Length: 104
Image (tube, rainbow, N blue to C red; front, side, top):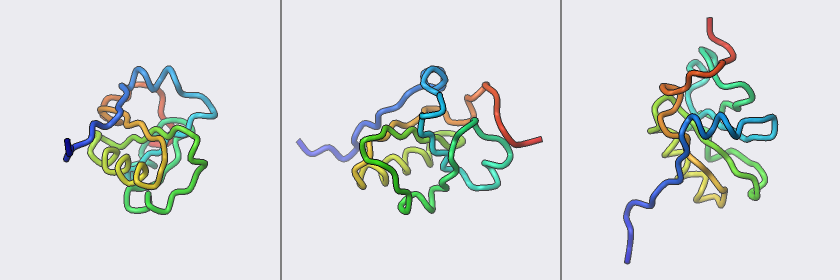
């Protein structure tokens, strides 16, 4: 049966916190200004409008996050079309209560 909406693999903020280390690939797809205001340590800023240019080993799992979850779902779709293994972070930075880098 044809499925118009594919279920997007999603983890919670709490699950992400348990997976974060220096080898985790976490793409923050918010704008550079949003990223500068505060981001998760070691997250790489690849704004949604630049995500189609992103290159990485295809065997690596990539986590995508934005402010609320809308842009990260769009990034998920674009990256999976390119053959990447991607997991969306549900709730985005709105639900993040851990330490952040940047901001005031």
